[in-house]
Amino acid sequence: MSVNTSAPARALPAAPIPVPRTAPRRRSVAQGALAVLLIIVGALTAAYVAQRIGGTHDYLAMSRPVGKGAQISRDDLVVVRVNQAVGLRPIPAANAGQVIGKRAVMALVPGTLLTLDQVTETPVPAPGHQLIGIALGEDRMPSASRLSVGAQVLLVVVPVRSNGDGPDLVPPRTITATIVQLAAGSRSGQTVINVEVATVDAPTVAALAAGDRIVLALDGS
Image 1 (tube, rainbow, N blue to C red):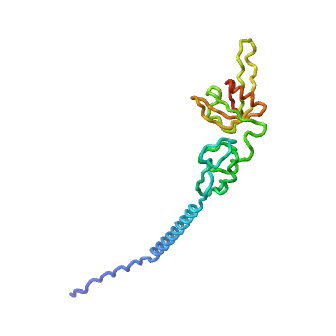
Image 2 (image 1 turned 120 degrees about the vertical axis):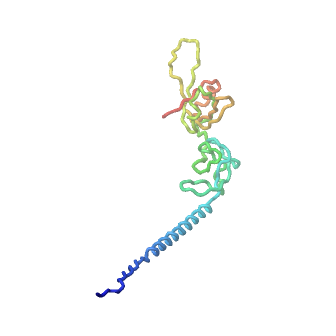
Image 3 (image 1 turned 45 degrees about the vertical axis):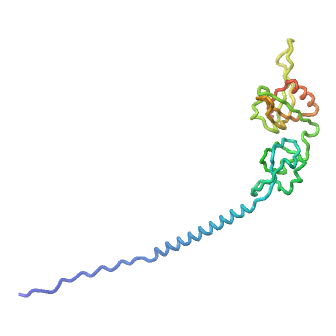
């Protein structure tokens, strides 16, 4: 009887799994392109900021309040350095001679950048008109917050009360006026209003104001 003494066959080792070498390379290329893009964007941003900072110029602004129709003097102006802005046309500081001596078209407050649209050579009041100052209490006018320079108003004449038996519902006289300037009065709750009225109405308005016979109404027309 014969015995087989040969060793059992061994299994061959598994072949190594090939690892793709392209993935890391692709990732490194994408990262490099992103880094270059970020560098370009950063450089463009820095250039834009530098250009904006370097684009400042000297312009004229108001240093103190100036009412509508008032002449603008050199002391009313201050030079400010600001960037150019699209849509704004402030007056360069070098052109101050074009502003001094002219009149304000509207009320100007400190810090306002001045433009040529805000000044005029036409005097205020306009020809055929006069300025009258009226001091009114809170019960003779709408809320001061509702009033603004340039607003059209009606000056309502308060009738003189008498002991007669005349009708009470006679429509009072009204005079058209334009607000030129607003200021706080010397008494609490009082407002001083400079109004522009026709020359023919100026003496009447002045007399009525002195007699406290005016009520101011906003004109909605």
